[in-house]
Amino acid sequence: MTMCVRLRRLFQRANVDGRETREGRMDAGLPSESNEGRRRWTWRMWMAHRQTSSPVPVISNQFEKEEEELMEEIQLISQEKNGLRDYLNLTLGSKIMRLNQSYEELKLKQKELMTLQHDLEMATMEAREEKEELKKEINFYSNLQCRALMENNLIKKKLMTLQQESKEVQAEWASIQQHLDVNLSGKDEQENNSILDTQEHQVSETARELGLATDQEDSILQNELPPQEAPAEELSPQEAPAVELPPQEAP
Image 1 (spheres, rainbow, N blue to C red):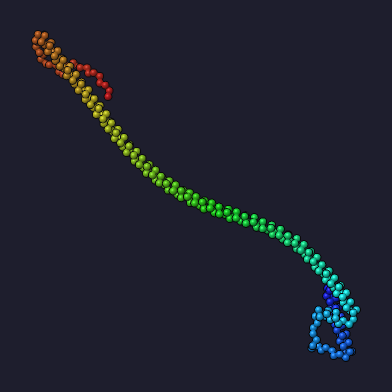
Image 2 (cartoon, rainbow, N blue to C red; image 1 turned 90 degrees about the vertical axis):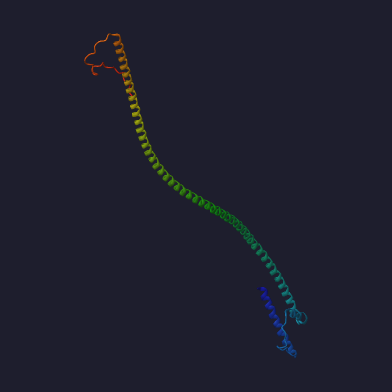
């Protein structure tokens, strides 16, 4: 700001000097410069004019002093600018370092999150595979249960048929047993009858043999004894001597 103020003062003095020169020219009877032909003076032109055509050396000395002061102020301003630049570099550098540290931390967190996401994706894939395997096992066991129920029903039906067949077999066996019993009883009766027939035959044979023996004894006695008159009445068969039969065995 001070530099700008001093530059304005310098330009104002240049304008005053220009007015003084115009007034001097008018006092000397010289023609004044018109506004149309007047050029815009630059800083270098003004400095060259001040160095060559300055009528007053005191003003040039003041201008040189002010110029030196301005140069010193410019140097000070440049130093301040450099200091501010260094300060900004330090402050912004620390902030940038902090930002870099936070960026690195965020990068590490991002890597951790990416690894966690990858692990979660792998876990979800494994869970899906296990779910599919469990579905297959459930379907297999459900089908196995249906097969077991069907086989159980078939076994029950076969058991019922076998029970019915066993009942029929038992009934047939009972009827066969009855027939066997009847046949055995008939055979026993036949055997008993045959035994009785043989015993009766034996008894009749023994009786016949006894009768023959008695007849022989009678004939022998008749031959040895003198002939006698036969009795008028023969003995009836009831008066004949009784013959004892042997005891019969129980069948």
